Image (cartoon, rainbow, N blue to C red; front, side, top):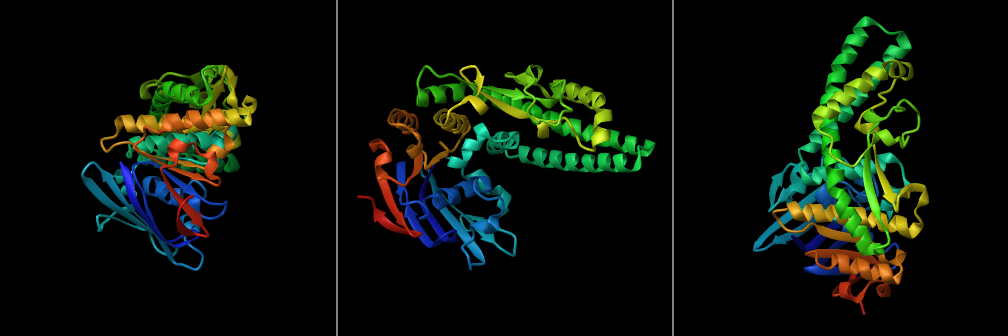
Length: 391
């Protein structure tokens, strides 16, 4: 699938923007702060209903405007689809496909993309919550129904925590324990399904990440992944969300049945601690994705360049999984301000790794930073305006 045209109204710093795109590489060039990232952010929103930069939609609406519109014409073979979303400050967002109104949550079914941005460095150096979110967003792209499981699980954790806090504050009552067991059942049912989905995904990502990292950094570097599961950790009642307990690490899939058994055992073992502290101490909300480089944890040991390459490898591996399963062609691959952070050899390796995707969108402040084979369709941007081809 490719985007043939992007149209924006009152989005970020764009009053209006009309951008024609082609198959293969498309390069947006402009000084920092001119609006390059806003273009890829808008397309990322169409496929995920979220921004990689802000947590609220109204932040993407141009100052002084009440709404913003993102409209993209998509093409796969002979089929064309016009997708549109309107972001509103004081009303629900609205979406259309081929001018027919649809539910906004259905929009990602029509468009798939993978975006790498500087913020993704936090996948390597940041907190476990960011890595959990990375896995869950990829799960939803591959199977939209899992978003319901994730949302239901988060609600159960919130309700269960409220009950635990109430029990701690008022003293434990028999009725509260009975209600807690009901929430335990929901927690285990939903959490086990999510654990199975995540561990299956990690096992599938493992060879793709290893291959992508080697392609970017060279054959003398070895990247690996593992699921760190709180239900298997003997010290899961510690405050530290990253205990790195070897017994909690898995590189293979854990079935929902096995996860449920381990989950229930952990809840029994930690009942006293949970009641004392008033929080749910085990489950997918406390798991992590462990990243290793040459046998050492990437977090804390990897250099800036290695961390950057690892984060890139995670996104390239995601795109590879999506393209393998898609009935509508490759996801659109978007690389925001990547090449300035790489040395010359890694720039060339990355260009070779991405040039066979159906469409790649690249942003750069300096035209010369981008390898020549990725500069075929280059657009210059200044002050929120598309000003023409780069020289």
